[in-house]
Length: 415
Length: 183
Image (cartoon, rainbow over all chains, first blue to last red; front, side, top):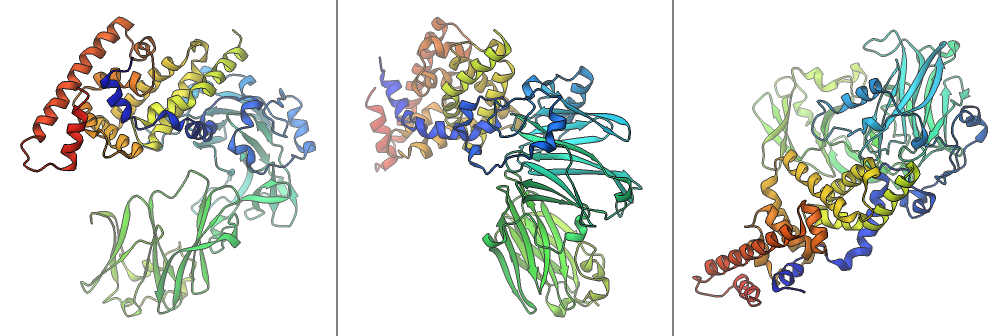
C-alpha cells in the first residue's frame, strides 16, 4: 500500500520509471565498457556495430589463426581468438599486471582486471619466443605485455592503432636502428595493419584478432635487416579495406609541420582565431576517422600538428608552445585542466592577458616586444578564479624559438 | 553450471537490470559517475558470475551501493552525497514547485535511513528485496523503515517550523506547506 511518505518520495524520484526506454538505450551505449563476451544476439543492438568494418584479408591471418580457437560468435567478419577460451595467465604474470594499479595518479589508473589476464599468442623474434599477455580493464579497454619487450594500456579501448618501436642505439635524438615493432589495432575501426617503408615497399604483419572484451588485433613484426636503419620505416598504418584509418609515424617529429594524417580535413572547422600583424593564427579541429578529434595550428603559411586523440581521450593537461616565424612569435597553449587565461609578463614590467577560446590560448607577441629590454620573461596560465595553474619562465629570448617549433634557428625573430 | 551457463546467467542479468542499476546510480550521483559506477558494478558481477543469484537485482544494487560508497570515500566527497541527491532530484524531475522540502528533510537523515526509504520508493523494491540490498532481514528492514519514516516526518516538521516566522509567504514556503498536507 502506498503510504503518504512513499507518495512524497516518489514525487521527487529523479529518474522516473517512465524513462526506462531511455535508460536501456544508455545502458546499451555503456555495454562496450562491460568486459564480457556477449553473444551475437546482444551485439546486434550495440551501437558499435554500426561502425564501418570490412573483411580481413583472410590469407594474412590464416597462418596465425589456424593454431588458435576460432570463434565466429562475435559476428566479427574476422577469424578471432575467443578471449574467454584463451589460457589464463600464471600468478607471476597476474602480479605484473596487478602492479599497474599501484601508484597510478588519480584518474590515470587503467583499472586492469589482472586476474583475467590471458595468453594471446607467442611469436618469434630473432629466434626467441615472446608471449603476448592481455588483460581487460574496467573501462572496456585492455593492458598488454609482450614478455621481454614491453607493453602498455589502452584503458578505454578506443585507440585505433598503437605502435611501440624497439631497437638499439637509443639516444636523445631517437633510435639508431629500429629492429622490431609491436602494437595493436582496434577491430571497431580497422581490419588490417601495414608497415610502409620509405623506399615505397610495404609489409603486412600477422595480426591476431581477439574477441570481446578486447576487440583488437595484435602484432609483433621483426623488421628485415636491410631496412632497420633510422628512417627506413616511414609509418605503420591501420587499414579498413584499402583506406588508411590511423597512422603512426616512425619519425613523428618529421611530421610535426603537417596537418594530422588521420584528420577528415573536409570537415575541419575553426575553433580559435587571433588576428596578428602577420596575419590570422587559426586553430582548426576536425574529426578523425576513428571517432576522435584532431587539431592543428595554421599561422603565416605554416602548420603545427597538435595531434589526434581517440574517442574518450583528450588533452586534459596544459601544453604551451611557441610558433616563431621570421617576423613574429605566436604563443599557443591547450587550455585543459580549467585554464581560462594566459598572462604574458615582460622585462619592462608590462603585462598582457588573453582569454581562452575553443580550448586554446593564442597570444601573438607584439613585434616591438621581440627585443631584450621588452621581451616576455614569463607566461602564466590561470584558472577561472585567477589562480596560476602553470608558470613558464623565459630565461632568454631564444627560448621563444625552441626546438618544438617548426622554425629554423636562423629564422628566430627575437633580438 | 558450466562456464557458458555462468556467462548466460550474467548476460540475462545484464539485459534485465542494466537500466535498473543505471537508474539507481543516476538517482545518487551525476551522470558520468553513474555510468562508471554501473560499469564497475557489472564488472564485479561478471567476475563473480559463478555466484550471481537467479533473482539478481537486489544483489546488483547491493554491489552498486558498495561501489558508490567506495567512490565517495575515494573522492572524499561523502558529505556531498546528500546535497547531490537533492540537486539531482530537482534537476531530473524539473519539479521545482513540487515537494522539494521532502528532499531537504531527506538530507537530514543518515545515508542508511535514506536508503531504507528510497529503495522501495524509488527503485520499486519489495521489502524482502530491499532488505537484501542493505544486508538485513525483512523484519529488521521494516523496523528500520518505520524509524526512518518517523525521522523524516520530524525533519519535515522542523523545516516547516523554520519557515513560519517569515512575514510574507514565498513560493518556497508555499511548497513546504503543500508538502505538509499529506501528514
